[in-house]
Image (cartoon, rainbow, N blue to C red; front, side, top):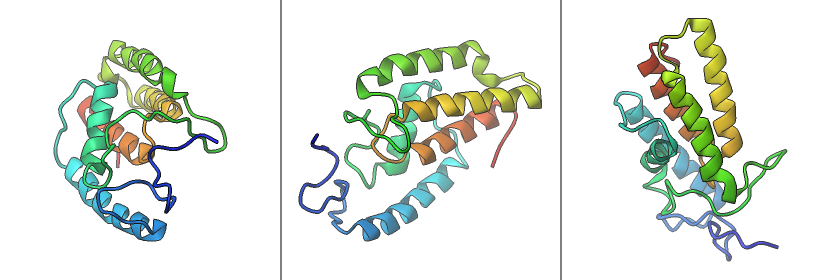
Length: 156
């Protein structure tokens, strides 16, 4: 069995800055703190190049008060129903995906229908990468919400 460096061996809970060892309490506190961070990101622009480093900045902004590893690329394999991108391939595959997004001018200048189609594609690709141990969905939504605003098609 592989040791998960993000999990406290005694409690089985994700290592966190708050010293919380109860999973329900951590989930509750995390929900409140991330909600505040996401609200803040909804009203300002987090500068970056819409690449993996920019996505890491979003993760750090959202989860940095909770997890010491916020914004770091995971080093363990994770899965839900299917496995996500293996850790050793995250940077390479991300470069391909975000490089293609850049070639599409970050989806600027598209019709509504084309924008929706391409946004869905990139959201699915970044979801398959799943670069962080926890918090990928919230990070992706904030990242693509900002990209959408800047492309002229804001989403909620």
